[in-house]
Length: 621
Image (spheres, rainbow, N blue to C red):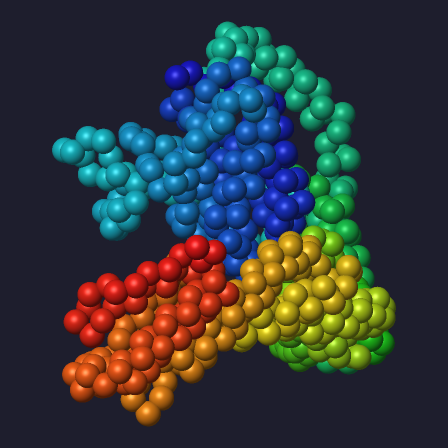
């Protein structure tokens, strides 16, 4: 894979990445980005002061997203490095393939490809920095960059430190121009090869131009600040830097802190007049970076304090909506985040801690209030959902059970809204809904009560019908008629607006028919009872004459052995009077049984004591 990247492109990429870090990362202004090409790979170094503690994953994610948004002619192998200013080695690395934006790039974290040799050099006449690649034995204990050659010792990737730059502040743009950790990396693009062909011509033209400039501008160069004259700017900056800690400790107000920031900014601007050919240029650059970094840190602190003060002022009045609470939480976090980014070793750390503790406490209390408000908000939403579903169910309720469920749901919605306290921001809305839901609950409660009474009446009718049927099976026709009458009366009294009206109407006809049949059976039963009474009267006496059985078709009469024996005794006496008496009694018995049979419209069959049929009579015969 050939890397086709121009030097101008590398500078453009570095600028894009640095701007992206400043936009996406809270402490992004403290980061410095450099790009170079080496061994068909694009190398990107991101470094920051030791006082800044970034999230490695977020840094890499921002860089990857920015790279993927840029177009490229072909796939490019890219190596990303993170390093603390002044350190020799990067502490984090990621490899990825840079493709066009429409192709999804796949990054491989912690995957290190073969590295034969990486040289990152500085021009000795400008920076006096040792080579960037070290293969000395003292650094071979770093296992994270392996070699693909098993017979070769692992090679460590080292980026040179920035000379004389403190690690607790960011470097400024002037330092960035001189410090190039990959200045020795070559450009393998076709454009670079073309430039090499013209190198001789360029050198000749350059020598001529330099000679002319040296003659015409020598005097000007020597008269610039801090070249051969006294350097008041550096001395002022040094004094301010040395007294910075004491100045911070003596701060008692935000205004004093702002004044210190202005002093730092003024001193940093004054250092910019020192030209690059000054022997003290590097020292001026370092001082300017320190002063500028501290100035930016103070600006962040002041802004955080102002944000915190505004948040405190807002918290003195209750929030009216949950959205307002969330906005206040966001404001507290805007005040807290810059203060948390200050390293414990920084001079501002002790100054910001008291207010940071107050801000955190306020945010914690607000978050707790927000949790409570979200709880009430969920209850409000639950009550609304319950009311909506209950309204739909009420319109289709067709039974007492469904109506009771509707009543229960309305009660649940009302109870949920009643539990929302007056201190909640949604209390007014809850009260408005209660005024709407309570009348609906009362209406459905009255309706359910009426339906419950109707249901009890309906059930009484059903139970009476069951008793009537059981009585019929036991031939208790009097009880059956009474229960059928009760059941029929109840179902006729159920109102038309009742849920049981249709069911009751469907029972009127069968209950009426059952009542008529029961009354007929009762009449027949009463008639049979009268027949039995007549038979009992006929068959009774001092000596029982007969026993009888009445069925649906006939009356069976059997002469008792006692009566038959008495007749035989009378006949054996051969007394004519006794014979006439016996004959007359038998005729009277026969006539009485026939009359009973005719009245009952049943056949009469008479048997002697031995079971022999001695007489029969058909009704109307």
